Length: 188
Image (cartoon, rainbow, N blue to C red):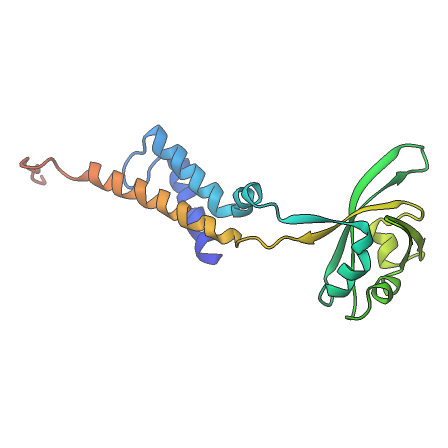
């Protein structure tokens, strides 16, 4: 990460000066700018190819809460009607504590649920709890539980970014060479 960030900063400086090894052409500047974006935000590309989250049904809430590691957030999509009468759908999270049963971990976070078949509703939310600060609302439906998808590392984007930089480097280096058979002017 440090190497990629440092490289991105240096290439961005070259882009702003329009000079890498020699004066950059417009298409070289555009390629270098693309490489800078790839180095600074690799997840912008990987998230388009591989969604980082997958939705599971609300009835898997307790099983998901049980499987999550300590101090890891549980992310859920809820929907309901607010005080103004507007239908709202929002994605919220609550950080879970020590490992254990899903129901107990959620109760420790300050929220309980009631399950009626496939429908899951938020039962109670303790005042001042992590769940209340997270945005849980009593009586709202749990539409989905979001789980991190098994995706490749976003850092794989660094390889094509450095390949683009190398391509521009060698292209400009070729332009800097004197023509074959030509003479190089002597220094005055």
